[in-house]
Length: 346
Image (cartoon, rainbow, N blue to C red):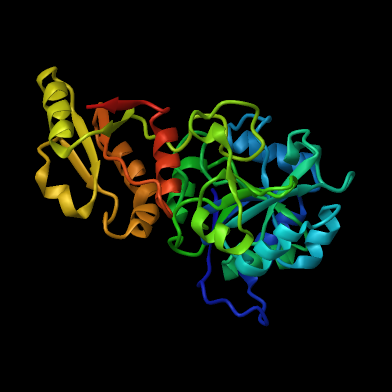
């Protein structure tokens, strides 16, 4: 039976909590423990141990050429893991750590498990902005490798029950800190070159990065998901519910026409839309992911909506598209991956 430690989010860093001590002890023993961050639930293990990291890949069914993000609780840990901190990275750390921002550095050799970095000379590191996550990492006294706590390819977990649904019997336990806030994973920025490069859009937007460091490039492979992964989430199909997802580049009338065609074929069709238009569709299942006038609500609700489709019996899902501005860039990145880059141009 998977352990489930219940912890309130307002933990006091000056107090000791038996649940956190217990979870940290398992991490020290090279076991795998899921815990909440401000983005999604992470699947944590000792980033220095091959044995522990192997358990992450086994639990998730994740390809071993996909690097992991290392989570830390203080800047001293960063100095132990990387060779240098470029000026751009220093500025971003000052602005957005702790927070939903992962930075890629040149790693120090011989410190982390090679399985964490998938053989790369760089390492992805972040400091989560969640009191429970920080308390667990601090208590463990270790850098913690932590991808999202879901089976590989499935929607990321934004609640402890999602972790239980995916990983029951595969990990020691989950620290239940309630629902996560941001809802999509951290932004990943490569700081090893002259110009910072966004490898994965997320909770910190391109516009926010630009305000801090000026020029910021976007990795072209984001559009097609090709090439060797330099960052988590760059290569394989992710975030997908069981039924195939198709993005529709068109009007709501175009979406409805596609739904009608599939229902005429005897298939059950679902629609992923927003609060503003949820009543306008005639389909077997219509789910709102948030409000179109506030894309932060869409980011927050995206994975839960995709998981909800798995509890229905739809055969196909049609999803509306969103402007790729602000957090919309991250939303569309996740939807494109959920759809395997299938887009219907109406």
